[in-house]
Image 1: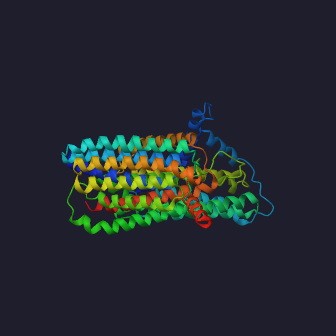
Image 2: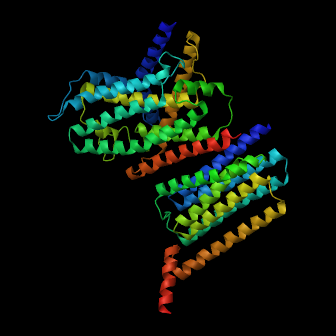
Image 3: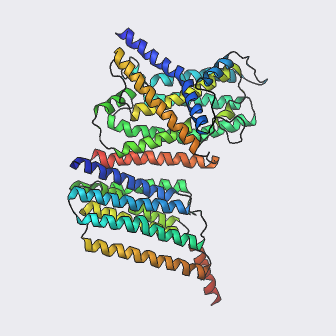
Length: 225
Length: 317
């Protein structure tokens, strides 16, 4: 496999990453959001493997395997479990309609491409092109967090932001030191576990996972007090 | 020399137009087989057309001249559009006119008259079909142009011949933007031809029909022309997608061997495309009517992403 082919593959995967970020935003159902989230994890693992091959950085293979197990399998499974246990309504309830969200997402992508352009000119690493896409994906994850009503979709948005940051890290540094990556991976795992516990706690306290409902319940409580 | 190439120019358009009903037959037969039916055979659309041409035209009492005029305009515009898209040979005398924007405009002209004819009689179905067709095409057209532009930026032209030659002359590299453009183009092609996720081509009385609702009042040779035009449009879109994304095999010079080779390659790719279409039509259910705009705006978003990734990933390097 030649160097230019590696470059092309990484570019192709970056494009796929962007597509998956859009797909996450476009879903109607909670379970399909979860499927796309798992796909994003697998995509990250593949990217890490290819960058590891391209740069000869063997530690990246380990982090690729870790990414696959953690973000491709464990986290989606965990969230799926939570969704099933909580009997959450299957539909995603966005605050603005999906077509408008997609158009905003396009604007965000354009914006981040524009912002990153000067940085790309001075960067020389293998995957410098994917920096703009990683930035766009981070912002798209944030868009998902602010346009969704359910706490679960917001958490998936948060995890998607983390995925994109990992993608940016592979792209700009050709892989961080393994210690850092293991640390981050465990942080994410613990965060997901805590989120899971919180979901149950929130539901028993407020009878709903909708952020608006929580707000209203808090208001009521203040009024009573 | 110019006599031969002019002949070839006409011949390839005629081949496309005559093959169109067979292509429609291939799709319906493949669908029938996938549903464990025998199907009426590949030639059935031709038999239907011949039967319709022999029948008397029944006109509604309040049909105006537009209603009688429209089938001919629709058919001619579609044929002109079909002659823009080369199935066999790249360089032809008329290749300068083979511009994608002109192609879209010709199809828009056909659609305009189709919608007018739908509203002319004044039935509820005709008006509904016309308004739906216009709503969806207003969303489909930008998506189609956007995905074509992804390719034309590379070729620096919107001329089909130049774009095909450019694709043939560049070495094969992995271009994510082309994949985006292809997906968007396929989604638009499905919507423009009224195939299953968007419209059901086999229905004649369904509240959500689009294309059939507009031609419901037609009969005899008028109906034959309208249906033939729809079949040509399907083949045209298939050929356009083949030309833009998979042109390898198309003939560059006007030699007999080259053209024969081009014909074989075109037929193989076209039939592959049609089989894929029938598979998709069997696999998917029809979308709710209100989800179609979302489907089309997704196509637009994907095409736009193709454009962006083209700028980010492919021009800079």
